[in-house]
Image 1 (cartoon, rainbow, N blue to C red):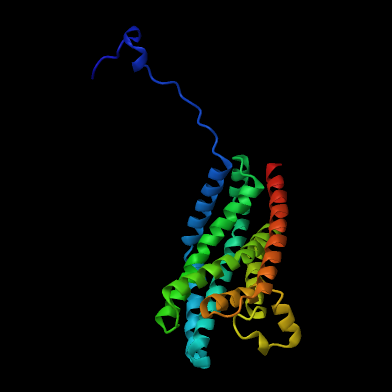
Image 2 (cartoon, rainbow, N blue to C red; image 1 turned 135 degrees about the vertical axis):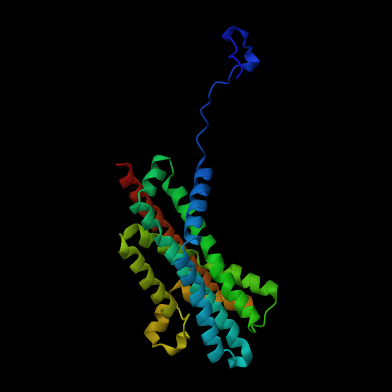
Length: 271
């Protein structure tokens, strides 16, 4: 082992550099890190992935076998749209309510101490939930294409993108539930909300089969118009402008509720 070099023999170039304090990460960096963490945690949840992929795929195969040949095979494409929307709805609402787990295990408090703002928290949560929607949409779409849905790969991709964008308010619904409800009530509230929006939005059966009051209620929900937008993009139906307005209003109102709820939650964590 060599002897230590005397202090007076050390040149400035050989002197160990002074430790530097790294700059604090920017708000964008914090947002991306939180989104990546939440996405990874959700995608590694086996029960979540089975529920949001296997269930809608199985329901598509069942309904397609029963009703897919109707309307000269056009019904199969509509069933695919509805089941993809249902899978995305389940993923969106469930992923949104996962924010309750961040509050319970103290992760939210760590983020607040690290300087994550309510707005960054909201954006990161939306990004993470948007990411976990993709597998559910893609699974149903690919199975549909493999089982006889008449659509080019480009039109199918367009349809999945339209559904993905249209599901934004359902993500915000999950976030609101996760911030307002506590513990198991958040997950239970998410399941009940998801089922109600799927049924009343006409994802499981045509809205015309319901009483008039249920039809009126269904047309006020974003899920009904998400399906209509998917039909427009896949089969060339008329663009549902009313649906764009309904989805936009839901998004704006829920976005404001999310910011208020998250600001309140962050304020509580700082105490």
